[in-house]
Length: 105
Length: 114
Image 1 (cartoon, rainbow over the protein chains, first blue to last red):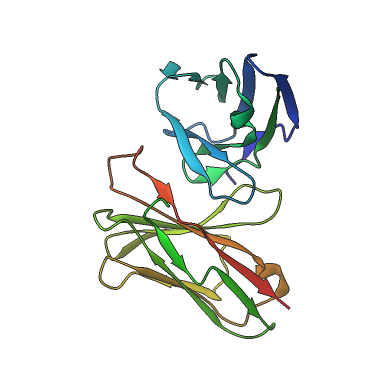
Image 2 (cartoon, rainbow over the protein chains, first blue to last red):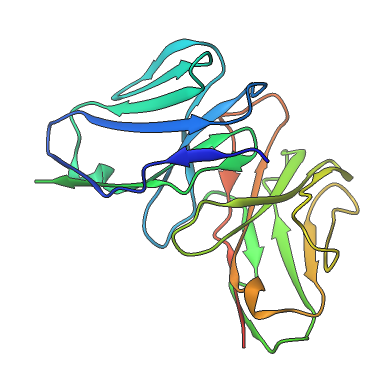
């Protein structure tokens, strides 16, 4: 069974800091990797997609993929209180449980 | 509003009853996905369609669940003989094959089985 593991948190960072979110997965054949943001009471929103080893940057977000280690991460630079949400890692069609991020003003 | 709509938004039913949910994707999106999500968990994949073809269905999905997308536009998800464990948020998402970033979730249908 394909598994995606995330630290459930909560992860608390001060405003302006870098938030680092991590995810590991079990299926070595996985080809596509996603990060979603889900605000409380809302549906998930896709924020990053990565499919090759290395880093992918989009604004304040950087996704990092290491297929050999079966590890994918999301860095949020200059964290803002509006970034406070649950961040879901998905590998293919399988989601992790999410990590709750709180950014303190 | 992402452009994906779901109906109803809330459904309360008694155990053993059948329920049907509808999802209307963004009109040009040919892929449609169904997930369910319970509190504190990530979405769990149920099934997905490309146009009217159901391409994948979760092995975890009971035979009580069935989905259709008869004309490649809207989709319905039916749960027969509901159980309390079916209580969850049922989410629909759509995108066009090959355009991963243009993927959007609907607001969900919250099912409560009493």
